[in-house]
Image (cartoon, rainbow, N blue to C red):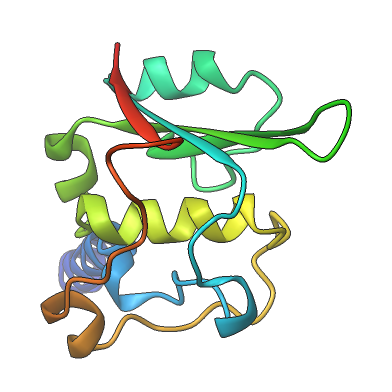
Length: 147
């Protein structure tokens, strides 16, 4: 009987852990007022492993224990705003059930002022996955830089 209870407990905990690693089932996208292209200078960096993300944003609070992406937003002298985003490799992003586009939308939401405690985060819908939204221009004042 004790062995059966322990087996059920282990399976339950394993299932809960597996579900927590699928972030696509959690509220992840910013609310509509923050889910739009960023108006300032946007720099997107691919940094490879999670340690690269964590080192790029040393003051970030990664509450999940996973450093998938982060951003540094600065308001410079004058009207110039800048947001630099650091995103882990696609294999790291996929390990939590997300795509580059979804992570980029999340981080751009933060660039647009969405607080780090993620109030009013929205669930990802099938339309969010299937529809490709132009959220940044790869040329002009916005660009991608690889590290």
